Length: 211
Image (cartoon, rainbow, N blue to C red):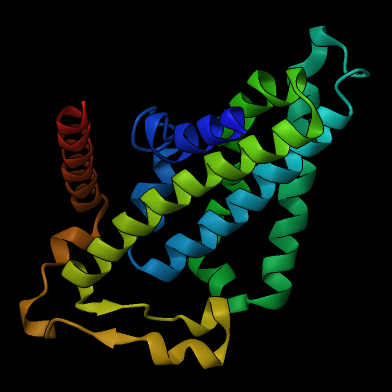
C-alpha cells in the first residue's frame, strides 16, 4: 500500500511530469487556450500512456532490449492512431480544435520515458498505476494552465464543453470577465509561458514551506 501511495504522490506532486520534470511542454503551451481543449488532449494522452504501459509491460519478456525503442514507437504510433480516429469519429469539433497535437502525442517524451523506465521493468499492475498517476498529474497541470488562460485571455470558462462532454454540459459554461477587459496576450504561447512560470514558482514556494 505504501508503494502505491508513493507512486501516487510522485505522479501528482513530487515528480509531476509537467511541473517538476518539465516534459511534454509543447502541448501545454499550444492547446491550453481553453479548458476543454486542455482536458481533451489530457484525456487522450492519459489513455495512450496507460495503454502503452500495459501493452509494453505484458510483452516485456519478448521485446529484445537492443531494438526496444523502435518497438516502443510502433506500439505508441498504433495506439495514437486508434485514438486519433476515435476522436475524429465521436467529436469532430474537438478533433478540429486539437488538430495536429493528437498525432504529435507520438513524440511525447513522457510516454516513451515511462515505457522504458517503468513498463519494461515492472508488472502490468505497477505499469498501469504508474501511467495513470503520471497522467493525472499532467492533466491537473494542463487543466490549471488552461483555466487561467481562458479566464484571463477570453473571459470565459468551459467554452465549448459540449465538444467533450456532450450538450448537457453547456450548463457549466461561464462568462467571467467582460470582453473589454480581457488580456489577449495570455491567449498566445508567450502568455502560457508566463502563467506556467508563476505556477512553478507557486509550487516551489509551497514545497519550501512544507519542508
